[in-house]
Image (tube, helix red, strand yellow):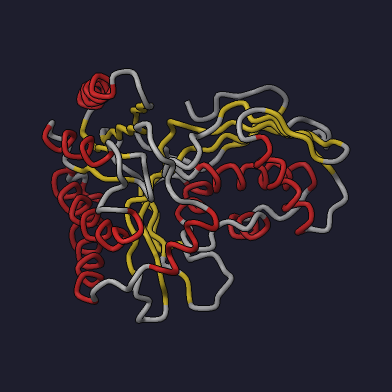
Length: 325
């Protein structure tokens, strides 16, 4: 590869399925479950430049990530960035982390700088609470991460990464409405949240270890869905004091209820929302559920449907690739 070639990074959105522990009584806080979904996805182009310039959706944020990355490494180089395709911002799909990591990965490639996932996240100041976005960016698939020690600045460790069965389909709806919490507002909300009951924290871990993960490995979607739906209701209640309910205000709760009524075994809200999802088996069921959601939304909002991403972010050079198709 020429040192002056344009580099492309394509990154899948991430779903956040739930937090493991807001108490931190055993020395680690947060932890979580999540997965990479290939739609929506981000496509970023970068080439060396004088200073930092950017264009496309969320270009100012991309430029800030680039400045942060270069300053972190004390590098005098610059870059021109083009965001060809973005993930809907502040919707619960990990747009900020995926954009920050994509910018970092592109610049690491251009300037031969460290590119391991934890180093990228630190350089652009992502992964301060959840590391789901960092590990889905790196690896794709279904991720379990182990939370952070008190006072640690490190990225939460990867505990497990699994393939999601090929037949499972995820349908995502992003209804119109208020954006989910992010940045300083999110940090303040976490600071104000009361610790959940210890028995509920234990119940979440029991569900994950003895029902959700075995069902994932065995391809048992009904059992997986039952566990995931209960985890969503338990952890959603932990966030209710700041969120306004188990799910974010707006259409999300109604969409979740309808997807369950329409037979989706696993349903929930990703992160702070407003994105919600239903997991079903088979392409036909996925297409059917997506059509029902589009009809219910009446042309408002966004609906995405597909499988789960089996790889992490991908790189290409020269001309724009379709890397995640």
